[in-house]
Length: 390
Image 1 (cartoon, rainbow, N blue to C red):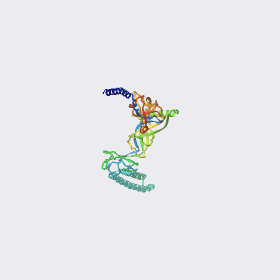
Image 2: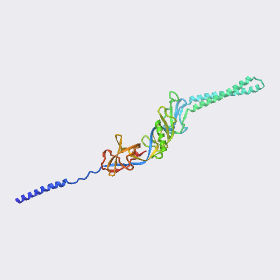
Image 3: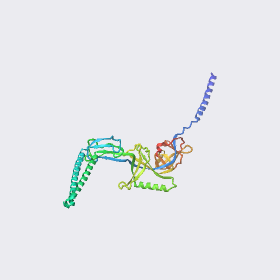
């Protein structure tokens, strides 16, 4: 019994010695370091950067021709489909011609009477002239016969003119398209009285849209600035800003670019004294008929290009009290807060004037999740194409 108690005591002593050693060894076990945060980064883009100037304007057809009733009367027919393509000379409307037909008949009657009077006056003159030569009638009678003949001939000319005028007006009862183009919605229906009060309306409008015109205005100060910038760039051959012939692009209402470049047509001769602006006009080919008159138009005019310009996405930049900063990645994959000087906005990009170099890497997403000095894993991504639409 004593032997068993002795062995038990020795076992307890051994356990008491081993337990502290066991817990001591567990406390000294090393833990794995946390993974580095992963951020998406882009490289500073170096390219030739266009320097655009934006203006707002409105589109017009190459020809926008209003269709009017040139004589008054009841509308008797419509011969087109609204919004369709019509050809030059195609019949569009008819107006009741009966009243003008009666005018034509009256003028025909008047012309017939005048011609009869001319025949009589000519006959009298032919009869009196030989008698006057032999002094059988007086000179006064001859002069009267000549005057009557001239008056009768003048009346025939007048009646012919009146008849022609009546027939012209009768022709106006058939209204045809003056050009090839697209016709709009009619402003009058069959049965309405048109041409003068109470309905002196423009019946419709036909537009030729093979070419679209864009009218836009710029202020006098903007005009002077553009002219001086163009002159300065052309004179400075050492500058990285290269002057060029103006490139004109049309930005559609959905933000996409119209796929045909435009050209300047003219600048108006004077500044509008009421608005202080100068009217400019540009034209764009429109073979697909995408553009229509009356659209809102944003004109982007490129007068110069910066060779080797540096661009970064606008979303990479944060601003603090007027100071623009980006998170750059240094050689040790550590976050570095960098102050940058920015130039103009181009599409969804900023042009960088100083603070970054071509090819440097900056944080693209998650600016609020990183801190200067933090070591990170980087995932290189491409700058989205929609940001580079310029």
